[in-house]
Image (cartoon, rainbow, N blue to C red; front, side):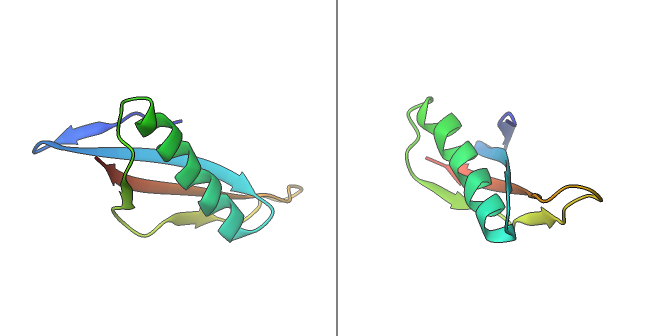
Length: 72
């Protein structure tokens, strides 16, 4: 779980997720941000940049993803 960064009155949220596919890891990272932002009363989030995805490490089967989003 990331914390929001504040720059020029824009709150940038960062979320992480893991999944068996890159798409599922991205979905979980987006869910991470949406859950955190909704606790602050922010219910509309949009990707700020392209998601970053890391392949599974040796001996693991899950992709890891990170997303940056702006929520209002």
